[in-house]
Each structure stands twice: as C-alpha cells, then as structure tokens.
Length: 261
Image (cartoon, rainbow, N blue to C red):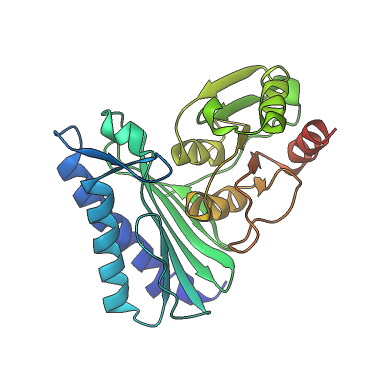
C-alpha cells in the first residue's frame, strides 16, 4: 500500500470524521426540524451542516479533488481522487434519538475506494478500513465471522420497505426463511458489525453509491465480500442500488446461488 494512505490522506479521513462528530453531537436529541426531499427521504439541519463543512474542508485542503455527497451536487474536479460523503447515514434513527446512525467518508483513487470510515460519535465507535492494510474498530483489528452456512447465518436488513419490486420482495422473503436469525435496522452501522463478526449477511436494495463506498472497503479489508446481487463489483459507474455483503467468500457464493435461482 502506498504510504500516502497511511499518512496525509488517511489522517484527512479521520479529521473529516472528527469534524462531523462535533456537529452531530451538537444536534443529537435536540429539537430539530425534519424536511423531506423529492424521494421522500428525511433531511435535517445537521445533515446539511455536516456536508457543507466537510465539503469546505476538502476544498480548502484538496482543491483539485472531486466530491460526491448526498445533499449537494457533485463537484467533479479530478479523476485521481474523489471524496464520498454521507453526512448522516440513518437520518431517521438520528431524528428519533437512536444512536445507530453514522457518518460515512470514503476516499477513492480512480474508481476504487482506498480508505473508508463508519463513524458513530455518540457511542464512540469508529470503523476504519484502508486498502491493503486491514480494518479496525477503535484501533482493534477486525475479522468477519467464519460462518459458511446460510441456515445458521445471522441476517441484517435495514428495512423491508427498501425492496421495491416484486422480484426484490421475493428474494427478501426467501432469504428471511432460509437463515437462523433476521434483524432489522442499523443502516451503515450494521456493515461495521458485519466487519467485526457480529452479522453474517446483509442484503439491501434501493441504495446510493454514497451509502456503500465507505462500507465496501471496511467489509473487504476485514475478510468479507460486498457486491451487487449478481456478484458484480460495485463501482461509482455501475451501481444499481442492490447490495449483498457476506462474511466470507464461501457464504457469499452460496448466497448468490440462492437468490439467483
């Protein structure tokens, strides 16, 4: 791994997470207005303030880098480095006082994530992945579970409402009936739990690239696999919103066979 990922740029990912944490802590469990975007997803003043501040920091320190975020238009300056920001992943959790939202920051070199962070500032959990160098929770190296059997696996899904088409609903129901345990909620925080060995499978749909860029490298660097439902590599250019994350390659292969019968 090029040392720059450990040094300046990696430290910048941490600084961005620190900056976001200051803002979320200021707003958490306070009276806050909730508005709704055209797709009916919620947004708060905290979402907007975080992304504005993170974008401002990046533009000041890396004016030639591109920025992709949830709340504002993409800023395409460079093909070499791109920052991907989800200021509050799990806004509904944040707005209802649940400390299982997170800030997501990823750094891409070309189309490939090389560093990512899932930061939960209220309970002080920070999941970090760096390409070629592993993944950590608060400095502890993480490893996904060794569960290889679907029938014994722990499944997590943010919400059954994310499955829109009949085909997606059928696959969701099939999987729930095939595993030993199904849990709901968590948004991106659940991917950190998979990286740390507490969840074996995550199946989701109707996502955006900013939902998945940071978690992808964390899952992969902890030993897991994250693709679309057909097993294709997820990139900024080809993402169709469907995500399958598994603790290991064996379990992932079995999952692809099950959902693509």
